[in-house]
Length: 356
Image: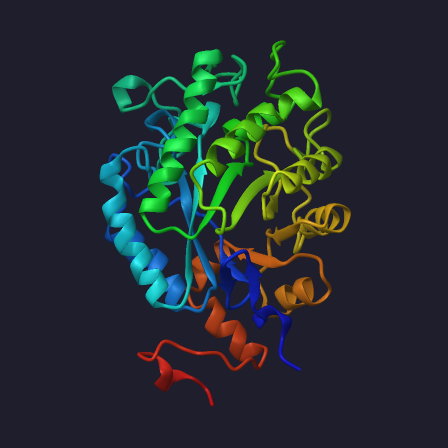
C-alpha cells in the first residue's frame, strides 16, 4: 500500500503531487525587497528535492510591512521579474510556487536574527512601526503608531496590489499571513488590540481586518487558484486569541472561499508559554479540520517521515509544512519517499543516485 504522504491532492485547478510543503521561511537576504540568486537556489533546491509546494517567505506588502530591512517584498513592479524566473524554475521541477503575503505590524523594523533582532531606529535604517494599538511587543521599545482609518485602508490596498503582482509573477498558491504576532494577528488578539472602533473589542470586530484583506486579495487572485490563510491557533497566553476563536474564524473563512488553513501558533506576546514537543501544534489543525471541514496544513516540530505519514494517514491534516527540517535537508521529498518506500519521480539529473 502506497504511503498517504505521497498521495496527490487536488485544490481547485492545482494538483499537488504529494502532501509535503516547504513552509515560508524568512531568509533576511534581500536588498530593497528584491529577490536574488540566494532565493533562487534556496527555493529551487527544495523544489528539486521533491516537495509538492514551495512557499516563498513572508513577503512584505509595503516597505513598512517588512520585519527587517533585508526582507523580501512585492510592493513594486520591479520586484516581479526575479520572482518570475524563480517560479519558472520551481515549475520545471514539477513543483508548485506559492507566496505568503505579510505585514509585520509592531514587529517590524528589527535587525536580522544573526544581528540579534534588535529594534532599529531611523539612523540604523529602521522606520516607525504600525499596529492596531499603540502598544509594543516589548515594553522597553519605541511604541508603534496606532493605525487610523486611512492607515487601515492602505494596508488593505497594499494586500490587493501585491496580489496582482503575485499573479503576474506566476505564483499558483497564495497565503495570507495572519499568524505569529504580525499585523493581522495583532488585530485578532485582545492582547494587542485595544481599539474601541469597529476593528476592536468583539470577536466580530477583531476579525474584520482579516476578512477585508481576504476579500481584497480575492478580488485580484484567480478564482481557480488555491488561497490559504495562516493563523496562530492560540497565543499560549491567558486572555489571548484561542483555539475556539480559531475554529470560528476558520468556519467563516471557509464560507468566504478560503481553501486551506495553515495552522501554527504563538508569536504574539513575549510572555507566551509554549509546551514544545513533536507534533505539538498538530491537534489544532486536526480540530479545525474536523469541526469546520476546511482543509488544513500541520506544522511544528515534524521532523520524520513516519510522523508526517501518520498525520496524513489518520486525517489529522491534509498537508504537512516543513520549515527547519527542510533547512537541514533540502531533499525532504526524496528522502521521505525512500524511507516510506514510495516510488516517485526524481530529477533526471539525480536519478543515478536513486536507490532501486
